[in-house]
Image 1: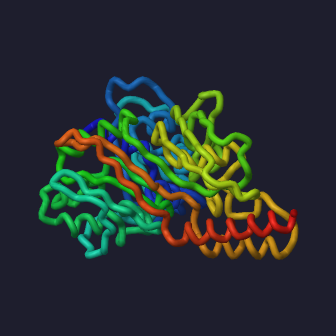
Image 2: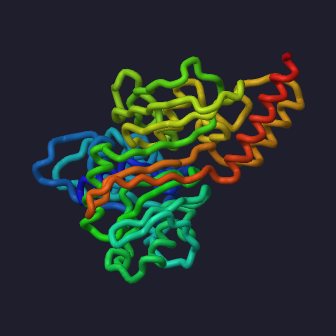
Image 3: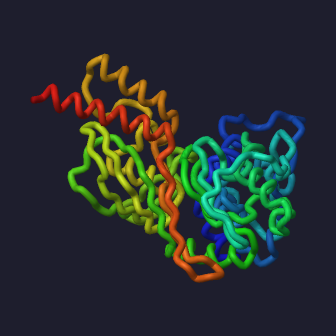
Length: 369
């Protein structure tokens, strides 16, 4: 399943990202004598050429960006041969490197939980579920229970793949905690390898519905821009237009309804990068409605009237998350070769907000006549 796992690593879980950020961000260097616990260690190979510590660890620590490693070193968390070092330290053969933190490393135990699942389809190879907003896909920092994986581990407890306590058992893609919609999970390794390759090669069909700020000039279009970690905020992704960093990312969009100050669009993913729709839309000046991470949780378009401000705040209260829903998913069945296609209706919070904007736009049109 190597190709499938590579794809999973591209899909970012907010819980994953927060795990290391909370360990390093805002902490002072260690006090003398403070108890510390080893979270990562290695001995440098004898053939290693001299290399900056931050660059070396970026290669050897999975999912850790260079900026995160630099922050850990600045806080005194990285120890080489018993001494705290800075990120510009030159790694040498046989160096003993450790990441030390002031609390024990948490071993995530996957506990089967009898959580109701909205199952759209299930057979011996795959299960297609409709995930509610607010549910993490798998355990991570601050979310060690109540996740989709906890629910699947209970539901599929008789299957060998889900008896190993693997946090990513069956996962070939993910969606963010506060994004609702469709996921497919595989029930055996053969199916996982087959589906993983489809996601890795970007041959699946994925369509999302999003409510964004502003009005598009065109009815449809394509956004192309490399996506990588933000150089200023480790919890955000960032578009590198010149391709100097990040990974190639392509999002196709089509306008579904225009409400003046906001627009309902459909997005089709050609690639599957972390926060792709959210960061591409922010880059184009159209942040997702109520997307706190990318600036959509404030009034970006509209009037200065207090009634309008109250209207938008009421909309925010109706959908206290980014307005993004994974509506459609298509793939080739790993056994039958059949083209499978699934759709999920918009959840109630999303429908309610659209209805309010429809009424607002209709009223504005009437007043303008």
